[in-house]
Amino acid sequence: MIQISTGRRFAAISLIALSGCIAVRAASLPELWKERIKSVVAVDYFTELENERRATTAYGVAIDGSGTVILPSAAVDPRASPRQLKQFKAYLPGDASGFDAVYLGQDAFTGWHFVRVDPKLAAQLTPITAWAAPGKAPVPALAEEIWGIGLRNKDEDFTPYILESHVALVQALPQQIGIAQQEVAGPGLPVFNRDGVFIGLAASSFGQTYLQFSQAERGGTPIMLVDLEESCAFSLAGEVLPYLGRVPGNVYGRPLAWLGAYGLESMDRDVASFLKLSNQSGAVVSEVLEDSPAQKAGMKDRDVIVAIDGQPLPRFRPDRVVTEYVEREIERRRPGDLIGLTVLRGTERVELKATLGDEPKLIREAERKYFDRLGFTAREFVYGDAVARRVAIRDAAGVVVSYVKPNSPAAVAGFEQEDWIKEIDGKPVKSFAEGAARLSALEADALRTEFVLLVGRGSDTAILRVKLR
Image (cartoon, rainbow, N blue to C red; front, side, top):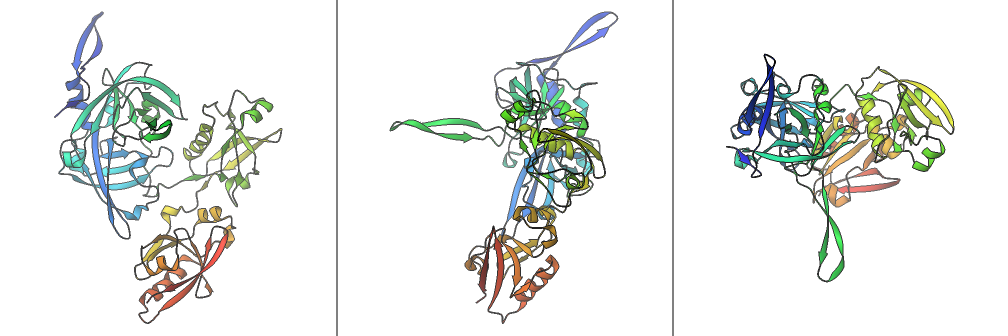
């Protein structure tokens, strides 16, 4: 069934040169729709938490003949470990029966999550590349008429429908983003021009800010409305098609290129003017991380990155976009790649060469274990924890609390998420394996009535007494 969100219909016109004359073939919207809907997939899965199984649904497009599907970055909670993601299933629009699917991981550069669907479903899909223009991907013109696909929820059998709009703006943020006058597709779903050519992939919805008034007040309270099912923003095809081959090698998205320039900030406009850099952007390095490729290359805190591999950083508006640009330039590379960085150190221009490393273990990769009787989950202390807590990597030890069960002994004792457990019953915890073993022994000891933990919380240290009876 086709639902059209506006009362208008249009024709896609293809011009074909035949024997020195021009023949015109009109393709109606239903004809275009019938083919392009074959590139669209709905995917759902469960996130297994300590006390619940949370269902999530996302939408994406097929990118190859093997049944590989890309989902938008917002499709998976960034705090969730891939170990917690279960029972992936994929669905054709209008059919909620479903096929098994496998999660492949997330690509850091694009943010996409990759899923591989069952071969029986793959055989029914058409890769989105089938609708790409030959040669360079087109950039839609302002006011150009465009259309896209939306899907209803699972309880409505993922019924597809059509959205139409016009291009209002094309902007670098830092990737090229098109913004339509109104919602034009569901997040992760394709956008086409009048000829049915693929011109973009809908991004997560942009919020719209309104001012709320009451009769009793002259002023108002600003509120933001976010449409989770439809979006007016889309990444242009030129920002999508070249990167479809970035299928992760594992569920953690590795290998992950790492520089170690932490806390990037955009350069102040007055500073840029003083340094005669008004026609380009700069990214200020807040901190160079310990034992990182940036530190080994000689980078210093407060250096200002002004060029990468000899190319000045483009000028962006708003200024803050430059930080994402630099991060993406790192993420598009691989560990072992050599990258040239031009930095300003005061008024001196310094040329650095850094060999990118493999990013240290991330929180989502950390080992973790849930202790039901104690009432909390402990996870491994990783490099990012040391950075956040301002401690040296050599002092990285103990375990971190990642979940506290309501009304449990841990909750009553005052546990909080991100507490850093340094000692158990007066003995230092040197590793996750050691901490998990000692906590498991406490969990299994039916005669134990209480135990004591030394916990770091921010810049403070506290002693928590956990009563088991």
